[in-house]
Length: 88
Image (cartoon, one colour):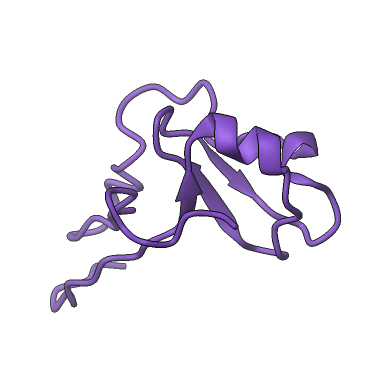
């Protein structure tokens, strides 16, 4: 499967520093992805467990976490930069 006519978009994940995530320890919605902006690590919520009890989904993966796949003509980029959606 190849995408020949890509649409440029920025996906902004719920994000904050690792310390803030640990201190606030929210319950992520089912399927919600969180990003630690200082470590580049991601977690996937299940709607039940608080943040500190979830495993990282990209820990130990070598290479850039931004290259999601090489099987497509386009790359999906998670832009976890300076947006306004820090955790509450």
